[in-house]
Length: 115
Image (tube, rainbow, N blue to C red; front, side, top):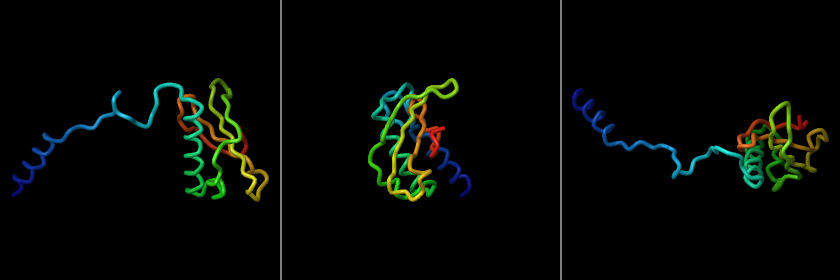
């Protein structure tokens, strides 16, 4: 019985097709600079994720578009900085949410200070 189980497992590995990301496959990471529109989509997605995880107030998830988006240089690296404004927050120091991305569209961080 033990030999039969081992034989079945090994034979199933022979018939399994590998799944790999490649040029013809759509996958989530990018290899070059992303557009302003793509960064906006990613920023909204991350804002909603942060609200759902209760890292920021739930009222942020209702914001539909950023108040500004720009490329900004910090230290030696240029990054996308997406700013959202929430007039419904009770804390004035948390009225703005800043979300940072690499130029390739990878999320870096989010905060209420912009630094």
